Image (cartoon, rainbow, N blue to C red; front, side, top):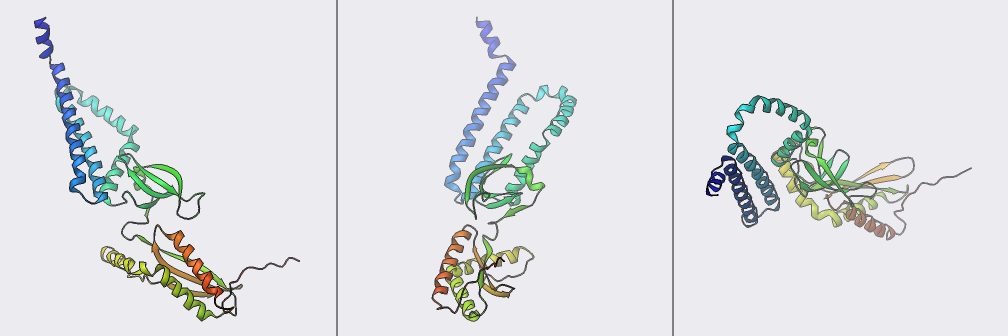
Length: 288
């Protein structure tokens, strides 16, 4: 019995298994400890998320490295076989490898981050998670009007960033230019209409102008781009049916729908107060 116990204790295979077990336990404990302490030392929400993701990935790398080190003596005779097998595996898992490369590009290339509103191909929504293989998006639009959630969660392979354009609505400039068109009858007081529409725009979206201008100045310093104006703009165009005013303005990318509601509500109220000086136009069809 004593001989059997000694043989079991000093068996190299058993020793390596025990070493792997202890190593894995230490790695898991250290990584979990570091992940818990991230909240204490990193204040920015996005930085905390990225740090935790990196620590998890680093833990996997440590585990793989531990296995290679423990069984390094048995890998020497398998070099050629591993090379051939590795080529086959790389070909079979090229999409997975591309997705991992895409994850690295996303994390360090500033394509997008959690909380950003993006459009990847035909999918538009807010990024709620960035995994090593896939990005998870809460979809907006489709059968729902405007920029509202439709309840569908979409997972997109990270390799997508190398194949298609990535549209980011909220990266360096978290505002959008939007516009509404207002048809006015011929014979209305056009100057009064212009003044009312501009005043309403200043009232509803005027607070965005200052912050949008500051963000745009940062864009001008970072990129080769013109110094555009973020002030509301009212333009007029005459067509066969009516005079069309276009109200262009800057708005928070999450508040397009609510801002349009406020603008149209105030325009209707002020137009009704004009005592007929301003009248909306509409298409009239005569069937003979």
